[in-house]
Every structure is written in structure tokens, then in C-alpha cells.
Length: 474
Length: 165
Image 1 (cartoon, rainbow over the protein chains, first blue to last red):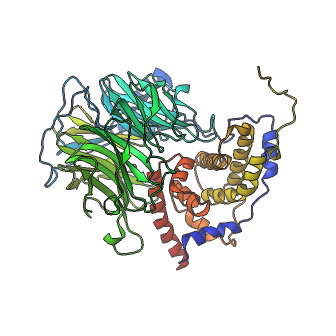
Image 2: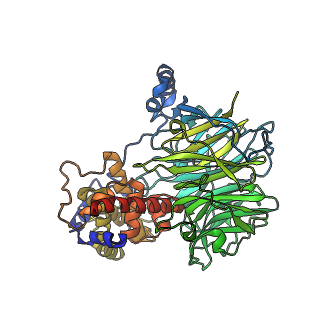
Image 3: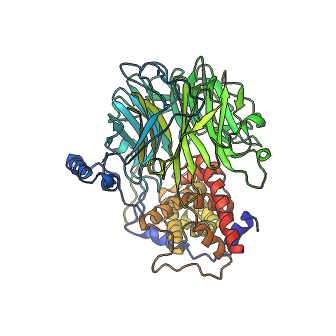
């Protein structure tokens, strides 16, 4: 078969229409609004007031089975969709109960914050997972954290950045949208929405980060998850941020070839990271950051190293960073990247995805699988050997948290059908041996899990349009 | 104080903006072909390209990287229009790409792929963008783009092999 690049070159033979007149006619159109597209898609994610909320709740009671469809498009979603129980893993999760750090301690990962008056205990061996709708069909839930007001989820809708809160993980309410959340899809700057991609909690401070594809990085602060204020960012690159954690001088935000720090989340300045820049010979793109022990660890992937692969940076204070030397045997080659990192296992555990190394498989196209790395000190890393059962083809880990002595990773698996990816959950006692939870399509089908957090004596995970609540078996 | 331009001022033309005019001459045919392959519709592709350049012209010199900006805008306009219409196939009144064109087989195969994979493949293999650039254009993450590229490439080869058989 011909090479794909040659195939795509066939497109050069398509005859193009005359477009200059169309552009000039559009500009001359008296209705032409700068900053507004004619092709604005319909808005489906709007808060429509308490009357609609009550109506929605009534509909849910009347027809629980149709809860998802009936509540689509409203600011409130509730009602379980499906439930499954995960049996105990066979070998490697020895700790039945674990303790989560107290509310005011430094957060280990953007999505691991567990807050409450008492430190909860979580047994991940036998959790019953229930799926509930979160937002509408256009809702993209990127990250979740727990705080003393319940749960907060950040993401985006066509209206721009979006926040949902919940007291229990079952009933979700979208925070009122205003200009604080940035341009909506096809507004302000054509066709692009501002998004929130991560949220961290420190005491009563909630800090979310993200940005706009062309307007650059953005950060927001809140104390209740409902009312948010924009933060100021001085300097830095003009790319969106990818992650935030409590640590260093207060908070550290990373992504888009940059590291930013802030004491309280309201004013951000650029940290020193000469090996973060994309145009640097040793640069890379940052995807996540975690605080652990005396060190902060940032992970992502190389953008300038000829061989590519995952990349790690470390810092003692969050203000000055240096990259861990690249080792192709550990960090892999092109397409391999670390998505998330947390303190746990032997010290730190990072997860991600990428193709199996060419030496691992025969054939032209190695399968795309989940990758895991461990490190005792954040500087020296080992790749966890590939496990064909736990890390089957077309899997990728998107987030990892440490729940006491147990690690929980979430992600997705492409099922080979038209447009479907379903959620996947893994657990490990040491970061090296992992068990994959059995798949139940009714609960885990149709979308991947992007983030997971401890909540009470269970877990809550989120993905596009969905939240999953994991509670201990009675 | 800066005075606003008079309302009766003649409308701006694309040719009035040298940089944007150059980007238009260099990029618009390629942009249209990429979008036509992505959305399977000549009309949506044309409208998206025209709208993107019109919006860029309306912003004048406020755009730091016109080439990247119009690619991003055109893609997102086309994606939004596709989403609004709810399907990828040519619509009523929309002239389809005729079957004897050499790109027919590829265009048909692309229609078998999910939107994200289709966009990643077209922007990478035809438009020549890297994964990071594609992430900026599509509003995705580099990791997500890489995954879409990996899966899309595999799926596309399967479909094309079926066609070749």
C-alpha cells in the first residue's frame, strides 16, 4: 500500500474554488461582526434557573432509566446511570484501609486533594462504581478535586471554561458562567473556547488553570467553587497551562513550555526553567506537576530532543527547575509521554501512554499502550516493564493518585469501534505491579476517565459528560 | 484620544493587508483542501476559510501569527459547523467531491474515522503540522493528538487496505 503521506498528497489535485471574492464579500457585509462567526454552534450547556432544575429532578424521578437524556442540556444532572462492583484484585493490593493526608497539607497531585474534618479511609479493593451524568453532551470534564465544600470539577463547554460542584458526587451543579471564564466557542476569537484543565486546593483556596489556544495561559481562584476570579499572569509563554499543584511558594502551574508560581493563586510569575522552552535543544512540554517530600516533580514529553520521549523536570522550591537527563531506554522514543505524576510507591509514580518500543513487538506498527514509571527520588527513574494483561493495546493512563499505600490510575481504552473510548481503572500496591479492573460497558463505556480524586471513603472520577462514584461495598 | 474611523469609510479588503494577503495566497488553497478532506464538504470548507480570513482581516495587525491563527480559526469554524449539522456527509445542495478525483478514495476512507482522528491526520499528513501545533489548532492536548494520530493512522490503513483489495 502507498505511504500515507503520498495518499494525502493526492489532495493537491482537488480543484479549489475562488475564495478571495468570498472573503472580501464577507468583510464588506454590513452585518459582518468582528469577533463573531456566522457558524456559531448552538449552546447546549446553560444554567436555566431553579424552575428548570426542579423540573429536571421530577423527570429523573419519573424516568430514572432516561435520566441521562432527560437532563442533557441543563445545569443540573443527577441520577445514577449504571453500577458495577469491582472484585478484589488478585495479588498486589495488600492495604485494605489507608489514610489520606490532612486537609491542610501540601497537595501531592492536582487531583489528589482530600479534604475534610477527619482524614478518610479508602479501601480500593472492592469498590462499587456508579456512573452519573455530569453536564451536557458538550461538557468536557478535565480534572476533579475535593475540598471542604464537596467536589469541584473543571473543564469546558462551548461557552468557555466551566466549573461544576457537587456535595456528594451524584448531583452536580454548574457554576454560573460569566466573562471571568473567558471567550466562548466562536466568540471573541473565532472558534476557540477557553478551558480549565486542572484544579488544586490548599486550605480554603481553590486554584484552577488553563487558558485559551490563542490568548494564552489563564488562572482563576475561588473559595467556594461557585464564584471565581481571574488571576493575573506576568510574562511567560502564550500557551495554555496544563496543570497546577499546591507546593513550592504556594502554587505551581506548568504547561506550554513554562512554569509559573504564585503564593496564593491570584498573581503569577515565571519560574526559572531554561530547559522548559520548546526552542531549547533540551526542551519539552509539561503535562503535570506534583509535590513530594522535599522536591517537586514535573512530567511531560520532549519536544526538541531528536528522539522525543517522556521528560521529567525537578525543583527543590518550585522557583528553579532542571530537566532529568534523557535516557531512551527509560523514557522511550517519539510519541511516548507522561500524562500525570504523584507521590507514592517507592517515591514518585508517573503514568502516561505511547507506542510500545519497537523492540518489544514485531511488526510495523507497535500498539499504543499505557506506560508507567517509578522513581525513589524524582531524579532517577525506571520504566515499569510492559504487562500485556494490565496494559493491553490501546490503553492510556490519564491520571494517578496515591491513596495511602495504594495507587489508583485512571484512563481510557479505545475499543476499536467508530468513535468510542471507554474508561479504565488500575490499582497497584507498589507502582510496579498493576491490576486492571474488569470492564463493564454499562458503567465504563463511551468515554475515558480524565481525573480521579479521593472523596470520603471512596473515589470520584470524571470524564467528558460523566462522573463515576466508587463507594465501598456494604 | 483615538478617534473611531468614520462609519462611511470604505470596507477593508483582504488585499489591503499585505501580510494577510500573502498568507491567503500561500495557504488558502491548502487550507481549503485540508478542510474539504476533514469535513467532506466543499461548501463548509469554503465558508470556513472565507470566514477565518475575514475575521483575521477584521483584526488587522492584532494577530501575532496570522498563518497559525487562520488555520486554527478555519478548522474550528468547520468543526463547529459540522457539529451543528450533525454529520460529515455532503449535505443537500452541497456539491460533493466527484468520484473520479484521485483524492476520492482517501476522502471516503477518512469519513470512516472519528472527527478527532480525521482532523489529526489531515493536519499532520497534509497540512504538515506537528502534534503540538495540531493541539493548538484543535484545542486538544499534545498527548491527545498523538493518540488520535496513532489510532487514526492504524484505522486509516485498515480502511485503505480494504479499498485496495
